[in-house]
Length: 358
Ligand code: 57M
Image (tube, rainbow, N blue to C red):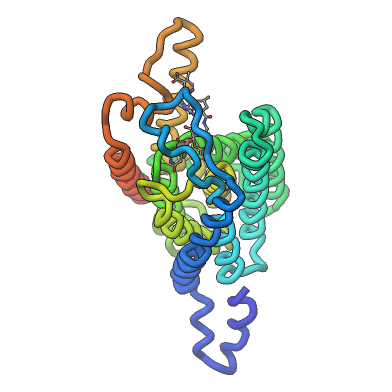
């Protein structure tokens, strides 16, 4: 918005020219989201405590989690406020991709909010029934996919990491594919969110990688040099990714071990959905499997565990998702979290290297 309001003044005061630069606006989107989360964090925590919106830890989890009972949850509200306010302030609000990603974030945020509300306020243990949760996630992702598909400038060609000549055009199948990426990312981040700081670390790393990807795809020179698709206007998503990084850092301040607050589904579902949407818009959908490798490993551990348990009555892991396996093996929570962060940094670096390795 500041871009739309202030940049036109550059003809009068040349200083306002600076608002033209995505890099400048991205840095300030990070700072703004960080400051907002710092400012509202204590207030959100107090509000949630006052209304007793806290986590109820069931008896089925690891013993080490029992003491976390009552920790305020739904801290994702503060992430959403920080991301959205910062994006609206610093992004070009005439850019349709920005509106699409805002829509996706709010859509998944509302689904998460509803689920948390049922669990924590109405005290309905199971929250929103999985079939409804999944159904609404598909509807939000379908709207995003249709929004892109109907735009003439948008291509249904996939870019496959490492293979510059492999560019399959999946045509109408792009719609279910985009839904799979967005809904898959949303649920995978949700599954990962089971230890203090575990989800938000890789979320920030993924946002950082996509900040660079989006910036490069939005520039003719960079995309030509790197042989990646050029998508006019996609560079603006760097501002959004910056807002996620700032909000994530601010949230981590309160969610670091021992956590004062959990993000809840109102945080995990929109963060995953937003990253999936950015991956789809920037036409680096398949890269998300590598960048967000931690989320993929967490989701796969659940799939293998469930299949193995149902088919042969045996578990592959002591407990799924895989972070619980390490807990039951005796690793301390901060050790698991920091090791997963390290893996996530390595994966983000590897992913960025594939932009050049073709
Ligand atoms: C939500 N929720 C956390 C917190 C967070 C199919 C099955 C694998 C589904 C899965 C599931 O329900 N996953 C989604 C996971 C929960 O965290 C809350 O949920 C929000 C995210 N949606 O923001 O509000 C607990 O995680 C801990 N936590 C922290 N720090 C944080 O910053 O310590 C969360 C954030 C919190 C807190 O203890 O209460 C969760 O783990 O429940 N189900 C599971 O993950 C269950 N696994 C399971 O049943 N495994 C089975 C197989 C056959 C699937 C097995 O391996 O045998 C675990 N859920 C629970 N206990 N409650 C098992 C242990």
